[in-house]
Length: 186
Image 1 (cartoon, rainbow, N blue to C red):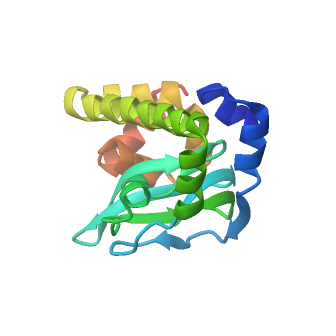
Image 2 (tube, helix red, strand yellow):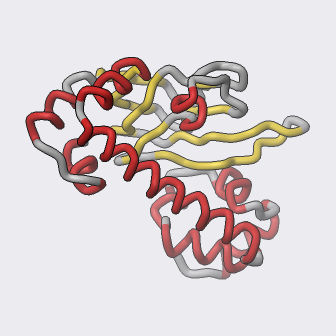
């Protein structure tokens, strides 16, 4: 975790060690809903092992927003940051291990240490840049371009995540996804 945070924004190592000391281990079985609509995200997670997905349900169909896997943060960011009820689900795809910190402790440490606040502002900026890029791809790319972009960026996920979930994430019908998967070298 320390290396991951230092790549976002290096800070004084004593402050970083103090911050990390407040994260606790948390394990979850596969196919566990960690957060559901209407629940407020009380923790920010750092993924040590496993894969998770966040998604909306519409007419009993999952519409996948994001995948998280090591090393990355996980959770429902809007709910955590604003302490308001989530509008969507966070579910484990596989058995998962995390470090987690409560909203209250995270806020206190950001209030106490400007460097931690700067670190998470930069993390939020990277998150926003990624979301804008994803939105652009969904709006501007055809299904083949979306598939190729995903395959180039995250080829390892084809062996970790069910293809129906990747198809949902890319907004590609499963039949078309299967055709693309069989014709494009990954």
